[in-house]
Image (cartoon, rainbow, N blue to C red):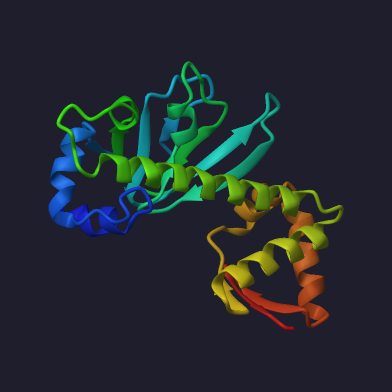
Length: 220
């Protein structure tokens, strides 16, 4: 576990907690780490969620599918980021999403009941973790609202421009890598891959942008 301490210390959930304090905190939260191969489901729709998952290595996709198999990528969870926190914190709620590993992935599971109740050991850092959790949930909510802004656009081009503009503003640069493959980007923006690729080609030809795989340069 100690090899992952730098990732934990840099994560939003453990922000402000030193590596020396992490041992006690992980014990307090009944933390356990598990390794999973690629394409393994960490969560299924209908599952009851009692633990928060934090990716320590690899990455996982949070995906929503309808009964016809139409796939919508909600987010990508990278090292230091959590998933299922909202479900775990809502009493008697069940998941309406899947979480599937994109690569071989190590996940840290944290007992949410120990996180949300008074620490029996009067842990001095417990309240800080609760504040961090609220901040993390708020950040995820803002990202979800941003995604809704993208997919609410009427055309594939407008969705692309909304997404790429937001990424450029977040990075403070017009040249950046996105975290999605072409199919994943299509699933994230709720468009057909063929239409997405066609529109990207048109935008490149018109001089609006340049790209190679996941690397983009916006011309402004």
